Length: 87
Image (cartoon, rainbow, N blue to C red):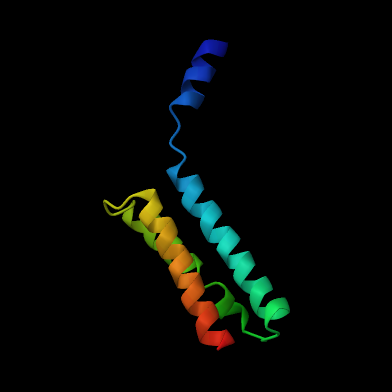
């Protein structure tokens, strides 16, 4: 029994978890950077913008792009949002 559980764990694909982790960290980081970094008060909806590419990843099942590309897209959207509201 233990060997089948171990083999099931080894066969898991962590790409969804990786993109979700990047999106979550970028969302929290954007909120903290805007509120405490530059002191800009932004609506809750705009602070959730880094989740948009993540939902695109989930609903298109990756669309043939790698996890690295999706993670970079999430980071780029986060930086663009920060730049828009901070500058």
